[in-house]
Every structure is written in structure tokens, then in C-alpha cells.
Length: 264
Length: 249
Image (cartoon, rainbow over all chains, first blue to last red; front, side, top):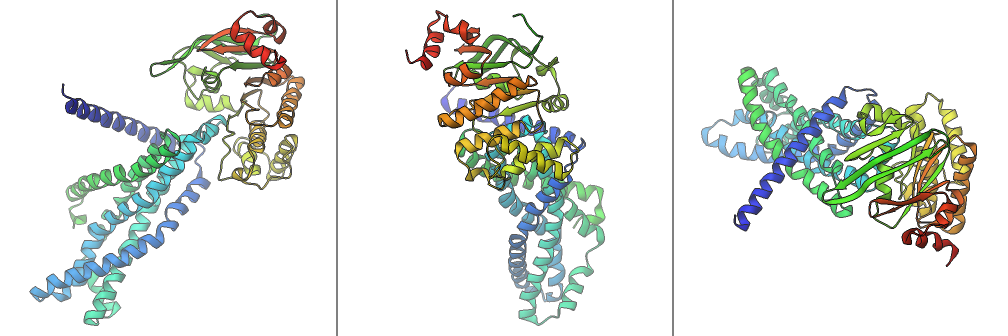
């Protein structure tokens, strides 16, 4: 076996081992969710950290995305004389896909890295062992609370992202065409059904589970001092984002099959 | 070993990390209310022994009995329950850095007792006073010196009045006076007779002062165990080196 073959087979082996350990950790977390005590106080605190503290990033990004999408949409629609459809097209693009996915990726970057670094720091300074020694189930107390917080915060942040995007779109559109806010939002939502709004937003609960689980796992299994903490922090972003993009494709397909009315 | 029934029984325990055999068939007993000092050079498996006793690590073979519970066989729920009777002082204290000193000590009381907040605050003050930190309640761990952190860690380990206390290098990096204060605190617990203590230490003065049983580890094996008097008589080179360290031979 050549050196290259040996290296790649080693990498594949490591990848499968890590995937197996991650799945085990996810299963352990799901089981722990239903065990007492339910750690409500910690969940609220973590939801605040994940949700409230991500708001400035989400609102700013939403506004910018709305403005840019609106400009691109106008450039295309003008060619066909369909400027009246710009608010609808923007709403469909934002609410159906761009909003949920962008929110997921932004939260994976901001929160995922934070969780990875925080838990990694706790692991290498033996604070996780200290929790265990104080008769506390550390997976329950640290990982489950963060996973649930991400699952609660993601749909809320997605809604904020959607409306910030629409607001950005309105600002861009009103500057060009002088459309009123009432008319803009009326057109934006006239083609959207309830399920078409709900399904893409609800799927971000799964994104929250992925971000919380992957970053908690990487922080939880960090080794090797400050280098290990840095690695856990960086690594929390990349696999979370990749997994999120991949799962998004599956979820869109599932929504198309199970809820044809909710598919955009 | 004769005397009272052992509270802690470490029976034929082995532990490997990868290729490295850290403990190999290690056995010792600690009677109720006794103080066992585990001695040995760095990297001989002393801290691993404490983590095995606490159930933070699983042995590859052997049995660990604590208060009649077979630690290595417990599932996580039962292990959590068993740990309510155990306290652990970590080598680097492992205080929660997002909490103040008082919150660190209050943490186990809030989780595992139904005490009122007033009683919790009272107990926290009492525990911190015992380690000389009654004026540092609102300090964050990062604002404390190494010795103060260690004492705060000890106060947290003792918060629930554990029947078993595991202490990892209580005097490393501390001045002789602070070391003496910690030893005095451990001797106080010993004389009360309710707490069984296992201490990992390099400090022979401390070991002589507090230890009923000394266990010397070398390369994963127990090379000798006995009282201070018995160890002073030992002909084993490692033991002689350790015991002579305090006599200045």
C-alpha cells in the first residue's frame, strides 16, 4: 500500500470513527433530554446567549441580503416587465430557502464556534470532570441545554432574518419605484400560504439540533490545552455548516413529498 | 489488613491509555475514617487512581468498591447518586470560571439539597471560613492566587459533607503555611472520623502529618504500602528515596 493510499484510508477510518462517536453523543443527548432535572434555568440562559446575542448579526445580514436580492430580482424582472412580482419573488426566495439557510450558517459560525470553545475550555481545565464529581450529569447540564437552546432560537432567528430581509427589500424597492410599505408587504405575502411559511421555518429546528450537537460534541471531546480549544472552536463551524447544507437538501425533499402545499 | 471494614477497596485494578499501561493490578484498602496518601513520581498513575475512584474513568480490569458500591459497574444515573457522598479536589482546582467563589461552593448545595437560599448562604460562608476565604466570596476564580483557588476547591468539595474525600495534590505550588493550613483542615476531618480521605501528594511532610496509610506507586505498580513507621523501615529504593526526602538524608 502506498503512502497516499495509507493516508487516505486512515482519513476515511477517522471520519467514520468520528461520525460514529458523534451519533452516539447525539443519541446520549436525546436520551438525557427526557431525564430529570430538566434544567429550565440553564436552557433559558443558553437561549438568551444563542438567540438574543445573535440578533444584531441576523438583523444586519437580513437587511443586506434583502437589499441585494431585491436589486438582483429587479434586474431580471424588468426584462420581462414583471416588476409587480418583485415583492412576491423576494418573499418566496427569502422565506423558502435563503432566510433559513443563511440563519443556520450564521448561527453555526457565531454560536457553534462559541459553544465549541466554551466546552473545550471546560474540558481541558477539568471543569467538566468537576461537574461530574459534583454529581451532575454533564451531558445533560452542558450539551442538552445548549442543543435545546439552539433548537428554540433558530426558528425565531429565522423569522427575524426573513422580516429583516423583506424590510431590506422594501427599502431598496421603495427607493427605486416609490412603492408604499403596505402595498409591498401585501404583494410579498399574497402568494405565500401558511404551510409555505411554516415548513421552511420549522426545518431550522433540525439545523439547531445539528449546530448544538456538533459543537457540543467537539467541545466535549477537546484535548490538548489551548490548541485543542482552538481546534474545537474552528472545527465546530465547518462540520456543522457542511452537515446543515446536506441535511437541508434532504429536508427540502421530504417537505416536497410530505407537504406538497408547503413546498415552494 | 485488619481493622474496620474498608470504605474503599481498590482490587486488582489495571488501566491502559492506548499502549501505555498506567496501572497494573493495583490493590489497596482504606478503612472508614482513614487517610490514605498515594505517593509516587509524576506520571505513575496517581491522579488516574483518583479518577477511577470517582468513576470519571473506567478500569480495564479489577474492582473498585466505595461504600459497598461497585463503582465501575454503576450506570451514569447511579454513579451520579453515588457521587453525592463523595468530594473531589482537583489538582488545578477546576473551579467554574463563570461563577464567583461563593457560587462555586453553593452550586452542589443548590442542586442536591432542599435548603433555603438563606441556609445555603450560611453554609457557603461556613465552608469558606474553614478555608480562610470568608472575605473572598464575590471574587471570580481567575482573580484568586493558586493557593486560594485550591482552598476554594476544597470548600466546594466539602460543601455536601461527603463521606469520602479525594484530594489531588493539595499542596502543589503552595507555600508551607498554606500547605500546613490545608493539612490542618484535613486532620480536622480525620479526627471527626466521618470522612475517609485519599490524598495524592508529592509532599512527604504532608503525607507524614496526615497519612494513616501510605501507598507508593512506581510505573503502574504498588511497590510498598503501610504506615509511616513501616515505610521508614523499608529497604525498597524508591520508598527510601521518598521517605528520606523529608528527613533531609
